Image (tube, rainbow, N blue to C red; front, side, top):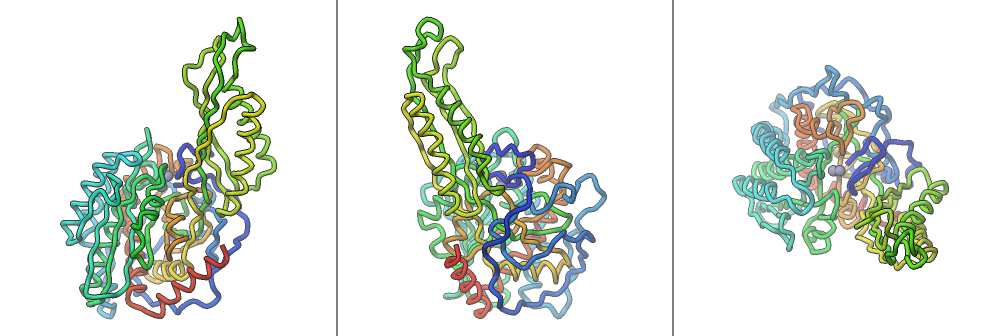
Amino acid sequence: MTLTLGSDSAAGCFGRLFKRRKASKSRPQELASSSTYPSSSIKGGSEKSPEHCHCVCPTCDFSFSDENVWWNSESKTTLPPYSPVIEESVSDATFTIAHTLDMLGSRLRELSMQLHGHPEIQFHEKFAHDLLTSFMEDHGFKVYRQYLGLSTAWRAEYSHGKGGRVVGVNSEMDALLGLGHACGHNLIAASGCGVAIALKAALEATNTPGKIILLGTPAEEVGGGKIILLDRGGYDEMDLCLMCHPGPGPSHSFDVGSTLAMQNIEVEFFGKSAHAGAAPWEGTNALDAAFLAYSSISVLRQQMKPDQRVHGIIQGKDWFPNIIPDYAKMKWIVRAPTHAELQVLAEKILNCFRAASLATSCELSIRIDAAYYDLNQNAALAKEFETVIKQRYQMETTCRGSTASTDFGNVGHRLPSLHPMFAIPTEPNGGNHTSAFARAAATEEAHEAAMTVTNALALTAFRAMRDETFFQEVVRSFEASQTTS
Ligand SMILES: [Zn+2]
Ligand SMILES: [Zn+2]
């Protein structure tokens, strides 16, 4: 997700850090009292997050720190190994989740590395689909392949007893063209499997009724796989949904802030070719239309807010200097802190295309894809996650957020959801969507960080399944977020 160099080349990408506007939403004043989680033997990094806030900020940054405090892979600091000492007094579920993930860790690492070695782009995640569905089947889940008409989507579910809460988990799988797993979705995929399997073990150990639904979600970077699954009912049964995402950040840190809403726009200008020297007046120049649109948007930037983004490219077909170009295509991505604000900005961008069409007499065709919404992190789930991370690992959770975007944003506006980011060690300037981040996503340290967030997500979800008071708080937090958004 997080992009570091201001060169967002793909839709699901996260932008460069900057100071975001103050949050418009905050957590409810009163949250259910948190569970207490026994501290593992692990001591977190000594480096504290620069700022700790108790609000879930829909407008804060997502790679959750300035570059100068990123966890540097060159440094000697490494995440302590995940090998919690289980005290006798801990609850069955806490023990079971930790133990299950401890036993499963090397297998999840293998899964992650297999995916890393076979990067597949949006809607082509065939290897990942087959590998992960077999894995979940082997662990006692009922698997639905090619789920809801998407050839690489899948669903793995498990029920214990009758009734109970339904927890959803997401495993992203897609990589980036030419860069491989430069967004670390191999870690997300393995983590999703880990959360689901650990939860299953906890339901069995404590005889807690409930259902777990793990979705293999294709095309996060471009294509909005989750939005398609959401529209087709893939999330209907869930009471809440969880996933995680790696990014640059301070050593041993996590973030539950928001991301930007995002709109993909594809524009085509149709003109008429002519000899550029002999009879240019007979032509209608589609490249000129694209040039004018690009220039208009560049001018518009001065009036844009600091946390808004617009970035695009121009593509031609059979262009040559002595032929008036009769066709030009542009692909644009527009981002803003909320969907409402995005719509206003997108309309201004659309006017730039219309003006260019008018000025050049080119015909205009516009395709607007489904928007990615801003991340609506559930305040009660975020607070519980933060508590787990603090009590069990002595690590910090911030809520700075990112200028990136994700299709999980749409999920969070439909049902209570949580999408923590977790830091992995990176090379300088080696954030998401760089080859350096692809290398980072394959390290043992990144896997250990993924296992920590996996454990914390499983504990958070289990509390929502087991604790009615807490679950009602989750529901109230969601309802409050809907009235303020
Ligand atoms: Zn990405
Ligand atoms: Zn990503």
